[in-house]
Each structure stands twice: as C-alpha cells, then as structure tokens.
Image (tube, rainbow, N blue to C red; front, side, top):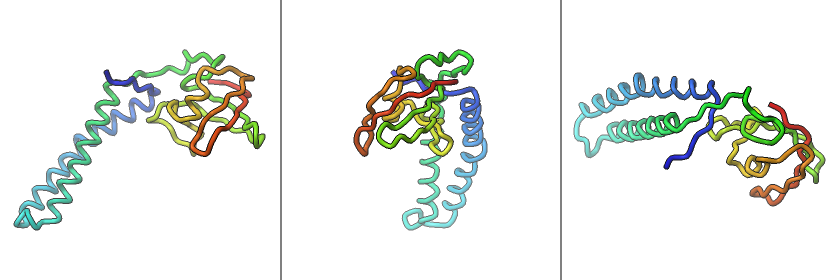
Length: 157
C-alpha cells in the first residue's frame, strides 16, 4: 500500500501544473530530440542520441513520481489544524536547551520542505521528534550530529 502524502491545496495545484507541463511540453520535446539525434547516423556511436534517451528516461521517471504523489495526496486544510499539539502544518517555536537559541519551523510534508523558508519535513529527525508534543514539553531529538534537547515554546497554525 502506498503511503499518504499530506500536502496543502497550493502544493497540490503546483504539482498538477508541473505534471501537465512535463506531459504536454517536455515529453514531446524529448521525443523530438531523440528523433533529431537518430537522423544523425549510427546509433552505436551517437552520443547525442544516448543523451536524449537518458534525458527522456529521467523525464519519464519524474512524471511517474509526480503521478504517484498526486494519486496518494491528501489535501490538508489549515482551518482544521489543532494547535494544541505539534502536527503537520503547525508552526512551532523551539528553544535549543544547550545554546538557548530560538527558532520557528513549520512542519510540512516532504514535498513542501524548504529550510530557507523555515519549513521542515514531518519525516525529518526534528519533525518526527516534535510530533504530538505540547507547549512546555522538552524533547530529545536525535540528529546526525548527535542528540539535541528542545523546549517547545509556542505552537500555532
């Protein structure tokens, strides 16, 4: 059974638009590039043909991946999010107990994660370590660099 991919409405629409472009613009362009390379002679020694075939394979893999994500997507509505506990789409303000540094992250799906925007994946070590916690909790999170203790200062939507 495929796992559910939790996404916002905006991300779902963006993925559908990207899939549409891949199928209607990029796929015909890849086929045209293969046809043009095929016309240039012996396929055994035709690097352009090999490159075009490889690009087509990567394109088809991306299309298949997006189709799978869209098929298993569950659209989340921010108005239904409970901010009493850390869950997907909540914004969590944390204090690193060792450094006393405070950061705010939004817990999002893997498809929406972007650390520069303060969005971390629900499947990341920190995301997993925070799920279900409430304000005031201190949680130990195991990250590649070791263990970090965080105090949850605030949870919001």
